[in-house]
Length: 354
Image 1 (tube, rainbow, N blue to C red):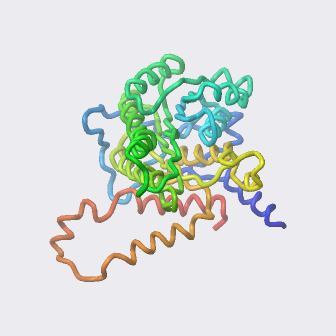
Image 2: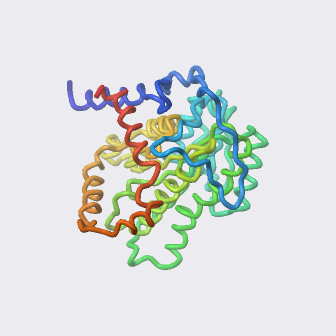
Image 3: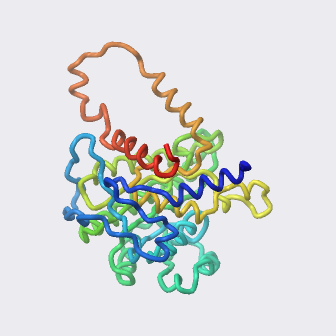
């Protein structure tokens, strides 16, 4: 078997085999979801908690992982900011194939028609486009109202809109910094602040995905501003994972590497990159499994390992007062990580045979 054949077989195993974290309930392959709905999660969604200044869920027992909240995608509604191109469009097409109603947020009018043309005629009956600037908080309110009018409740938000400010943090001016932070980070906050009360109120299984980047884990030499905003996106989504643990809302941070639409049509590297629809399918796989982290490009793993090793190697090996550890207990360990490791080990066994 050639290297390309092995890669193709491994990719098919990933896309066709996944296991819900909730016990032994299996998720139908996404290809099958395009023809029929997956079985709803047993027991339904938990009761919604009222919103307020502090949106906090009921704390989970130590070591317990929040079960998937949105497992039946058919007939549900997704809003994707920046959904008219690239990864956002790929997520939308995968969602439409899974039977979802798709709301495509956009800024540039001339990109809407070409994006719509990539959906099938049947799918286009369930796809709408809304012009929306994620930095506009009033715009979030009107967008959510329009989604509710057209499709009813919103079940999945994908914070995907972003700008690539490929400038060194030491060289960027204040205007460039403010523009990047406004879209890449504050825009995410604006989306979460708008939809979380709505999702809590309707109480149905819901999920929020934020597109970060491998730049949110590994800093680039000439992308300091971009890197800073993507690191911030990770922090916000991990914090929301803790805060929303006892609610009907799951959370994920999606960290892709290269996709084909990042490259010009004549770029020889384009053929090596991931297709955006496959990227979208992997995002939906993460949603129905309530994966905290959605990584799709294993070639970055050695660099990630070096970073994590460098962090741990920098922690001093020396005694510390026992009382200080007790005083800092609330941040010594974070609730999501250990259960996520166990979940990932179980999930990997379903497509790697380990």
